[in-house]
Amino acid sequence: MALSPLAPDAFPDLPVIEGVTFATAQAGVKYKNRTDVMLALCAPGTAVAGVFTRSSTRSAPVLDCQDKLGSDTGEGAAILVNSGNSNAFTGRKGRASVAAIVEATARATGLPAGRIFTSSTGVIGEPLPHDRITAKLEELAANQSAGDIKTAAQAIMTTDTFPKGASATVAFGDRTVSIAGIAKGSGMIAPDMATMLVYIFTDAKISQAALQKIVSAANDRTFNCITVDSDTSTSDSLLCCATGASGVDVEGDEIGGQGRPRSFVDPLW
Image (tube, rainbow, N blue to C red):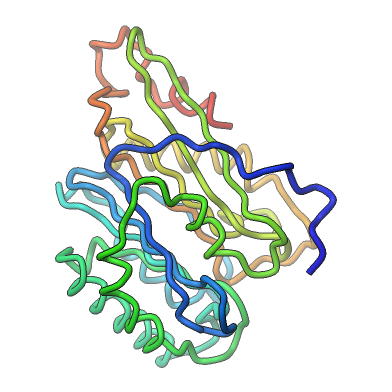
């Protein structure tokens, strides 16, 4: 596939977000000799927020993620993404595939099922060969690296011709919060959804409720204002993970009131 004329000269130099690691693998979900699975692990205490497609035919991974959001448990979290097959329009088989992937991820990482979030992107209407993914879970858990966010961005691509990433830093007095994100998507992008697949990580300390408010508000001002072909996908997902590793409480009074959600999110967008 020819490289898009809009492609940047190089993938951006994204900061390492303390408390987050990545690993990728070739599972052969659809294509051979292509990295197509990504596992991100987040440290205990991570808050997770998300927004998703509003399609009436949301995929099994989207429905599972939506069910799991909404609480601070104090535990770590995992994001498992595969490309090549969207696990959409797959009915009971699709739900069984999600359950199998979550169970295998829980065994490999020691995390509870309720803290494992999955996404799938690719062809629609075909059963997901989840056994190819679960066979790679031990490898993915063992090969985690804080510096592998670029390879994670590559693993989630489908029709994209280049990986997408962005970052920002936000100063709170003499301390700094870092933000890094990756995304995929080049079609089926329309308003009233999260957009494509997007994963954002920050070392800010923030409650799940406040993080969800920030993510939802930012989504309304950005991704929900974008359209490419007026088609809404079944799989669009945005997950944002705040590890708290910086120690900067963006809700707290000790940073001079700069911890308001609006102040925190503006530099990202």
